[in-house]
Length: 634
Image (cartoon, rainbow, N blue to C red; front, side, top):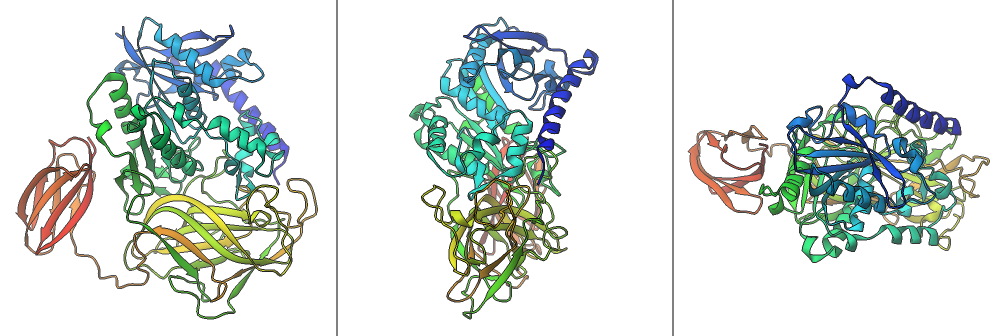
């Protein structure tokens, strides 16, 4: 286990970084106006104000951070970098009360929403302000936007929270009833000090109910929000849930103005990967690069500058379909057209849509808590861990404590949109143990790239309250569900869908001692012999939301049509086999026809006059119609 020394070192690093940044020469960075903003209790928050040359009355983008406002002196977000004079916005970066430049304003129980209200109020009264304020920021910088919005200052007109939901939920800290070790370690290292409170409440009790109720206020959000999240982020499900709540319970006047963007992104915070970049883990998604910033700017421009750019006419949900590497839209999540399809664990370690053929299939996992299965990528947060899609084959699937089931080589695309549930029949020789799951996309070259993971502590198989907990009787078979998060991916022809089953995933999740005793205290570890059953009467399966499952089919399914470039700005070039004459038509996301025509063989379709956005090209050859999504990026 990682000692408390790690937490001390990480916190000291954060403090030292802030100190070093403060000592850097002014010429190495932007040079903002340094100010202090008075709060209602008389204390002041430190602020950096970036004002473009020539600005006499400009809208403002407010960023409230616990991670040191001075870091923004090396480059502002949303594509501004060091070019503040080219921006139509004033940027105000504020240190949270009790953090860095605002350390002296610390009080016992700060109300960060009220602090945000006071900052917005101060901004609206400045000579350079036109009285319009929008907010932006990821993670903790996103959570505080909801808190500020709840206070409903009339100058706060819109918010762009990234990888963040305001709710304080049991499942965020205990996934499947298992303590999220690296997540809380990182939060402690950043100065939040939550682990002692979380560990004092290992079951879903009144403390969690109170915390949830206090942080769940969609009816109080009266401004448009553009929520931006990532499929490899640990907060993706929380964002999807809260967006749905905003769309159904925020005031009617604003309900249809909220937007959700889900890209192929990690939570970010270190390395080259961040929300909006192409590189994520060991994969690259060039079709997603820059979309976070461009859509956020369009949203801010519309609500702060009154620009009619069509962002208010887009669908409520825009999401990136990995595998196909293209953007799609839907009115809600999950999109229509998908159904829960069960893939059963077969006796030959394959996955298939039919029940196993015999009544004896079962496989053993030997789980030693002193040698847990390592966390390699996935939705992690701790700064020394990899985030996002990483190959599980070298360090996870090569061990002797994992069961691997996989589909046949796919002969046609398998489209998944939604969450995943694993349902297992399990027994153990111990009173308690864990069941951990990883879903991977196996490439033709053998790479097994993690897509989703999850875990369930067997004592919590019936639920997460104290009344739900129940020890296992050694040798008895139990049913248990492992919930995995949402995603959107097309498993391509030549790929395979793989399921890895272990009893640990450390340090992402706490390691079960297998002794059935008190959790999260020192104690003896026991090696567990855990059995997963996969037979006709005890049929374990994974349930994915798919458009269809083709499985092993002939690979001669492609018609040879090509559309490029995509994204396109000036023209589309469509090539079809032979020299067939065909008709074509372009539709926008509202289904309205924008252009149409006919051509033969190879043809360029000019699209320069179209607005940026998502489109569908429909073309008909020999009486059969085809539809291809494409993007106009600028």
